[in-house]
Length: 136
Image (cartoon, rainbow, N blue to C red; front, top):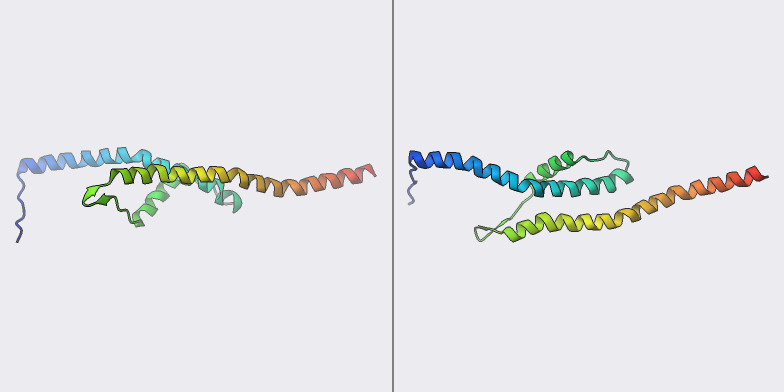
């Protein structure tokens, strides 16, 4: 049977002061990673679904809020044998979005060229038709 540990008033005071400070430091430290993920989500949304399906563009703050909302329901395993796995957490927060962003960056101009070809071809045909009929 385990006994509950009784904390002294000084220990409770230190925990009460230290816990919010540590929480605030953790939030400040994780904010750049969250902004990076939100930036990648925003750029990919604005490059692909917003353009091809004529949807509204996504702002950075909307992407950040959406990523936080989705993150609530996502299972995250950052502990390995009861210790924080820093290498895995940093690599999944930095490298994963960078790879996805790179792939989207490479595909995006090809998609733009495809759309430009689809719209340029009828324009060139109509110009050719107009020039042909104006000369006669």
